[in-house]
Image (cartoon, rainbow, N blue to C red):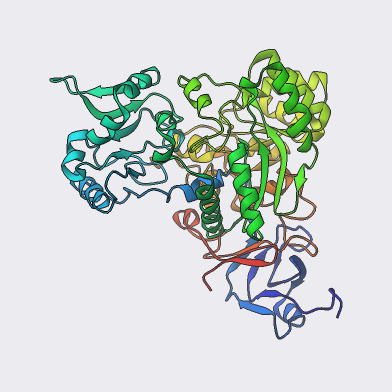
Amino acid sequence: MTGASRPLDLAVVDADVLTMDERAPRVRAVGLRAGRVAVLGDTAEVLALAGDDTRVVRAAGATVVPGLIDGHAHLDREGLRAVFPSLAGLSTLDEVLARIGALAARRPPGAWLVTMPLGDPPYYEDPPGVPDRWQLDAVAGATPVFVRPIWGYWRHRLPITSVFNSAALRILGPEFLARCAEFADVERDPASGEPTGRVHERVFEPTLELMLPGEVARFDPATRVDALAASMRAYAAVGTTGVYEGHGVADEVADAYRALAARGPLATRARLPLSLPWLSAGPAGRERLRTGPVRRVAGRGEGDELLRFAGLSLGSTHGSTGRDQRAAARPYTGWAGFDYEAALTGADLVDELVACARAGVQVAAMTPDMLDVYERVDRIVPIRDLRWVFGHITDLTPADVERVRRLGLVVTTHTNRYIYKEGRAVPLRGLVDAGVPVSLGTDNVPISLFHPLWHVTARRTRDGEVVSPEQRLSRLEALRLATVGGAWLTFEQDWRGRLAVGFAGDLAVLSDDPLAVGEQGLRDLGSVLTVVAGRVVHDLT
């Protein structure tokens, strides 16, 4: 039996299929074969191609959409949240101390107890109480305790706080706290002058933990691989089948992806620009980067349909104290997942971007000043056909939107911060109406793309206020940005992002209708069944 006549592998019928394909925008059933869409139509038409081994999912009217594509994901971080014991779900300081005491009681003598930060993910807002060293001593005894700080961009508010007990401080020694003074305030008891165990960092990228002995709190390579697999399961549960990492990935994260792919097919399609140490490389080192890794990720890069390394994250340096300490930890990056040295300024930045343009390398950058830099590069080497990425947009004037359009940029969003938290304009209506390609992104806070869909359609801040309602998108438009927009971002609009015959067999059967559910319900949508390349990767049916 030929492939074309072989029975379907999977049929989803009695559904409301939103294809994102203008030729057949809404059908009742979809059939997959060999990882691709083989047929769309009514239920009888699809069932006619089923066989004894075809899995048939009767969706009972549920909405089916193409697999969602997260244009700014930080996927690897999600699984890392479960590596250390959680302090979430606690409402008082006494509860925090009780949990730490219970955890310490189970640790072998002398072994460190390292926990996740205080508060509840994804933002870790308003922790129930921050213990001092002596309160920890009372419950943990001789067990050295380290309560990790958050990744500061989860909350976007400084300081970020770590806590040590007395046993931990004795092991680290007084010189450790002295070395933190550049980027942190070491809290001291007013009466005795003794450290309280609380250290408040003045930087968003946690730096103190990078200075700890390597065995204390680091994510080792095997842990990163296992956490990556857990991350993919979590993203699949909210219908996400593909990710793009706008900040790029450092070597240790790239290696984790390769190791996980060696185990078997990935549960999420990953498109990974590289994050490289430009700042510390020097002229000779930059030449080695250009002729080595950068050349390999030119054009469509290297890899396959599930895992592909393509393009480069290279933007301007944003000043931050503690940079030397973070650089010293290389190749380890902690929560970041990208290289802390992946940035340049001035003529050095322009020179490297010009070299990327000449080599046909897609570049991604995340700071507002990069629009001016991109224009400088474009005057030397045209970049319009390279789909360079302009991420984390905030307030763009109509003239800025026109510049973005003229340069052929692809915009990725961080609506969780700029609409929901900060009430910024984020002019998506203006961008879409100007014909600028846009891809929605979560930035991992939280991981569900249904939050950005809610942000760009409801335009509500966390205080409930509506911000720039004239920039509101329809739900169908927003869903298009989360599917077709993500495929355009990675030059793959001809084979994924829609449900059409011959396109990738990536889909999600949703828990409710995203076009009809209430505002709160839209934010809380999930997936009942998620499929990547024809394989079921999440199943609640």
